[in-house]
Image 1 (cartoon, rainbow, N blue to C red):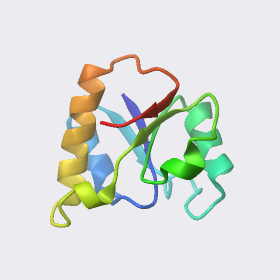
Image 2: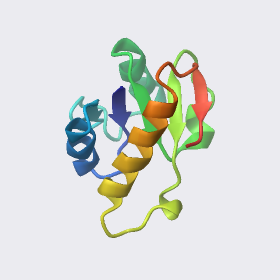
Image 3: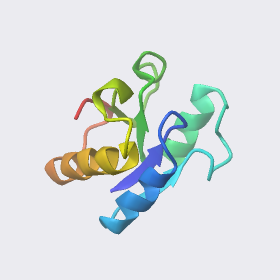
Image 4: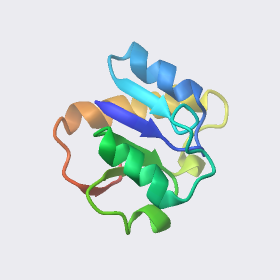
Length: 105
């Protein structure tokens, strides 16, 4: 699956996902870290990526984008990138063709 990882999550998550066979980039890689949410969504939409974010409230309004909502509080602080990648890999395998809208793995 193609993922765009939001700035609230570690960049190292991308490498973990790539090791699992996914195509993952971080918002920093696309130059939209600290940019308004619509700009981040536009990148996800243009690149057909599922946007992984903790910011459910703001991204819930976006249209045409697969948004995967993960709360950092549910992930261990140590090795967060590994645990997040495992969670996303499991979700991607269960949802190979996810619907547009919000998902909560």
